Length: 77
Image (cartoon, rainbow, N blue to C red):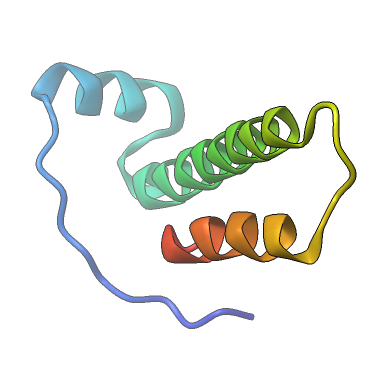
């Protein structure tokens, strides 16, 4: 299991109220963590799509693979 770290984020009060009304105050962090994971997956899929576009019409090379991998790792994905 991954180690947890405390962080602070400034958010619009309306968004916080919506989250709290949906999951409750005590589950806010859990909700935000799941939302962040979903967004990270979406960003990884977008990066994969850009990688595939660069490969259109040619074979995959190690240079292409490592460039895309570095881009994802640079974002923590």
